[in-house]
Length: 309
Image 1: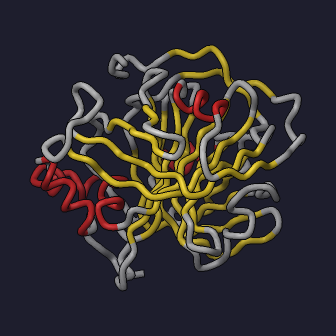
Image 2: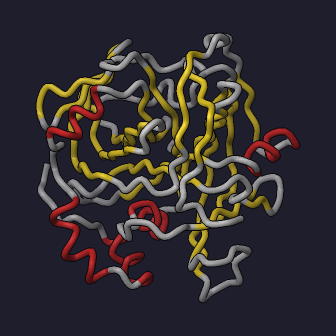
């Protein structure tokens, strides 16, 4: 794998437009690593779930999650991660996690607001294990994460899958009141540098922070963050995106794949106060998989950073 600078051209373009480029030139070499520090390796090993993004065989991006008892993720060395888990056969990525494919991962601990990210390449995949080689590893601040307490889902395993290409009243209502989702995006070119690949990011806010302009289109404010612009940098060049909305109360997962564009305030009036840009996501394919979360989460403590809706 060829070593690389911290940022790819899409990230640089987004940073320049947002005015954070010079700051990121200083921060990038310290923040973006080609291996996991020991505290990240320990963090991953204590998690009961990990969120990931990848392409399906048709080239669509999706986001999903894998689960297990704490310890189901192991790191034998600083560039290797082993995930001992099976992909649900109803999952849109059930046939996608093959050796040689890129993958983006987010380890998130909802009870503590900790999260760490990495981008990797799959080196091997068996029935119950995915082996990864790390390309980029970096931490994230706890902004916009809602604290939740975990309990077992008694209905886990009662799976059913429903495909959709537009949001019905129930799905639209759920998304319109959600406070958490995850987004997968991708930057790829002929280079083999470590900063290429798939990224998986968390997004959060007060219930109602996502607006729907029709039954296929989501308008999502981009709140101030770490100024890395990993997701927006990918979308600047490649509009493919995958969204995951976990239903923490019922134990379902709502997967959506489509196209996303960045809309800047200086180019269009935004339906949000206090943000300089938003993401406009247009659904192409979706899948609801019922009871696919083995854990339920309750007792929401909203992030103090969430802007008012």
